[in-house]
Every structure is written in C-alpha cells, then in structure tokens.
Length: 138
Image 1 (cartoon, helix red, strand yellow):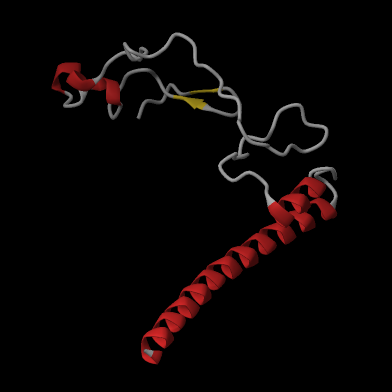
Image 2 (cartoon, rainbow, N blue to C red; image 1 turned 180 degrees about the vertical axis):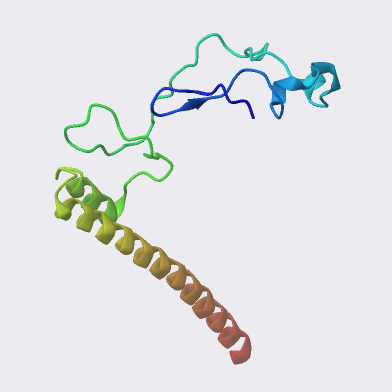
C-alpha cells in the first residue's frame, strides 16, 4: 500500500492508482469490461411515469399528507376488521390504542377467514351426507 494516504477526519483516501487497486489492471484484460455499459434509460421506457391512483380505500394515518410507503391496496378494509382498522386510523400513530386496534383487526380477520373455510368444509360434508342418505333410503 502506498504511504501517501490523506485523512479528512472520517475517511481515509487512497491514491487513485497503485498496486492492489482495481484500476491497475488493463481494462481490455478485465473479463467484465465488454459487458459494461453506461447507464441510460431503456429505449421503450416512457418519458414520464404515470402515478397510479388507488381504486379502493387506502387508510391513512392522521397528520400525514402522503400514505406510508408500505401501504397496500391489494386487500381493502372490509367487514368488522375493516371497521376496526378505520377506527385505528383515526387515532394518531404514537398512541398504543392505534396499534392495539390494528393487531385486533388482524387477529379478527384471521379468525373470520378460518371460520369461513370451516363453514365451507362443513357445508360440503353436510351436503355429501344428505346425498348419501338419500341414496341409502331408495
């Protein structure tokens, strides 16, 4: 290593060239050089990206002008858990009630989804039992 390092307090700057540096290799001898290109937009890329507006309700935290980046509109709030979420988003983010209501809404959503699935299986089993009973009674 070279001894003419400069330090600005936080960083140590190495000289731009010297032994052990990447730039001491002839660029034509480096295997990745033919694949290197200057960054430029893709030829078919649009000039300006159009911002998509959500088609469903997106809940926002009060006091914020824009939604947080992790907001998704794939699952809009619906049912009883949606009501809990709407109520939670009326409360500021720094209050524990906000997060407790969101956790309760998540757990309620899971329970209701499992109950719907179980009711579907139960209805199918009941229908199968009724068909078998009708065939047996003939």
